[in-house]
Amino acid sequence: MKTKLRKKYLAYRQTGNIIIRLLVVVFTIVFLYDQLFFEKDVTSVFDVFSNIHTGFLSNTLLLIAIILIPVNLFLESIKWKYLISKLETISIFSSIKGLLAGIAVSMIMPNRVGDYLGRVFILKKADRLQAVLSTFLGSLAQLITTIIFGLIALVFFYTEYINVYSGLHFWLYLGFILMVIIVIFIMILGFLNFSVFSIIIKKISGNYYKKIEKYAQVFSWYSQWELLYVLILSISRYVIFSLQFYLLLQLFGVEGGYFESMMLIAIIYIVMAIIPTIALTEIGVRGSVSLYIFQQHFEALGLWNSEIAIGVVSASSMLWLFNIVLPAIIGTGFVFSLKFFRKNNGS
Image (spheres, rainbow, N blue to C red):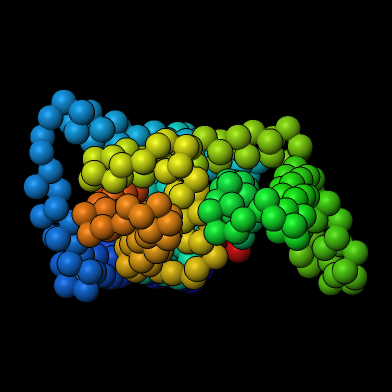
C-alpha cells in the first residue's frame, strides 16, 4: 500500500514539475513576443541601429558592450554561488543556469521576484526559504551599490540647478553633502554588520522565535569580510553594466565625457531602483527615465535635440535587450532544470 502511494506521489510530483515548467516557458515567450513586437515596438531600435555608420570605432564599442554581457552574468553567478555555499555547494555552471532561469521567470513577475524563485528551484538539497534569504543579501548589496553611486552623482549635479555659491544655498549644499556621507556610511556599516539583524529578530519575535530560528539565523552566517566580498562583487557588476550603457550611448551618437555620462547613468539607476516594475515593462520605464535625466542635463547646456533623444532611448533599449531579454531567452531553456517539487522539499 505504501509502495503504491509512494509511486503515485512520485508521479504527481514529476507531472507537477513538468506542468509548471511548461507554463513558465509559455508565459515568458508570449510576454516577450507581445512586449517586443507589439506593445513596445523594439523593432524601431533596430531600425536606428541599422542606420549607424559602421567603422572601426563603432564596431569596437559594440563588441566591447557585447563582451561585457557574459562578464556581467559571470560576476553575478560568482556572487550567488558564494552566498549559497553556506547551504549547498554548486558548480559555477549550475549557478549560471539558476541565474538565467531566474531572469526568465522574473520577466512575468513584479520587481524581479521571479529572480529568487528561478534560482532557488535549481538547488537540490538546500532549504528554499533559507536560500531566498541568502540570495536576498546579494540583491541588497546590489541595491546599496546603486544608491551609493546615485547619491554621489546627485552631489555633483546639485550645482547644475542651484547656485551653491550664494548665501544660504552654500550651507544647504554642504548639509546635503554631509547627509550623503552619513547615509552612505550607515548603509555600508549596516550591511557589513547584517548579522545583527538575526539578533533583532530574536529580540522582537519572543516565543515565536523557535519556529523561525532556522531562517532568522541565516544572516548570522556571513562575516564582515564575506559581506565585504559580496559588496565588492556588486560594485564590479555596477561598473560593468554602467560601462555598457556608456558605450552604447557613444555608439548611438550621444556625445559626452566619461565622468559626466557615468554620473547621469548613476542617477538613472537610482531612480529605476525605487520604481516598481515588471522586467518586461522596464524598457518603457527605463527609456522614459533615461530620456528625462539626459534632457534635463543637455537642456541646461543648450545642447538638447531630437538626435540626442533618439540616441538615449536607443542606447537604453539596447542595454535592456542585452542584459534582460537575451539572458531571459537563454534562461527559458534552463527552466526545464528547475525542480518545483522534490523529495526533500525544503520550505
